[in-house]
Image 1 (cartoon, rainbow, N blue to C red):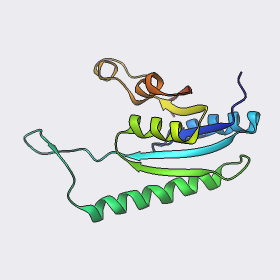
Image 2 (cartoon, rainbow, N blue to C red):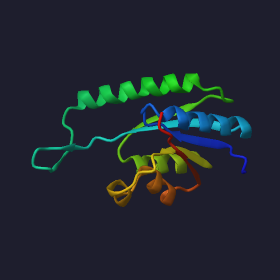
Image 3 (tube, helix red, strand yellow):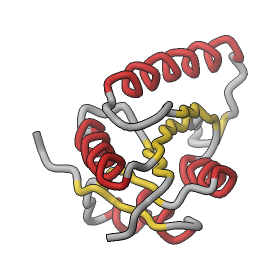
Length: 147
């Protein structure tokens, strides 16, 4: 196994995020790696005619982002890893923002959850698959187990 220096953990706030967090924490301890957390807020609204609508309520966007920052801060405080944990809450495409931050920060491992979807979800692709094929570094997709 490679010794990683900087691990970026994608957190989605589902109850299963604890499985992803635990695996990343274990790897960070083993490698004495720096850890960073990212949560991406995707604003995708569909009107009744099934057309994409961009959000117009900036105040709502700000509230959502601030809530995400608070939750990410709580997760960071719960981790037992070396050094300070950098946190990002980014608006936009989950795939693009994870890859962008990984490139900009010189991350050598991205850790995220994979739900192992089948059927139509598999055909449409998943965040884990999209990040895997675009990442500038290793990607660990933690298989989410039903709780």
